[in-house]
Image (cartoon, rainbow, N blue to C red):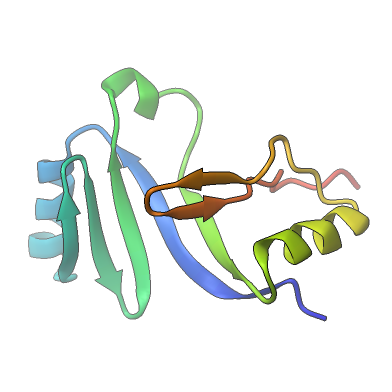
Length: 110
């Protein structure tokens, strides 16, 4: 059984949401489909790119874009399946106003 059925979106940390929206919308020509405070989303041919406004020091903290996937089954089933295959999860599933997240370690140890 496949663990994921596809990409949900990509989150990109940005220092200036307005400037980032201007670039993605007016320079690249991608439509802005959502704005909510320091968060904006653009549609890149069906893949949502979330522009995640952060404090300037947060965008320099060594992190980069975050890839989000849609689980094939329930989130709990997918986490258990991936754990059984050696995937590491540094935290439990977390719930937010906008949805639930399970963060995995993207670089497997081979």
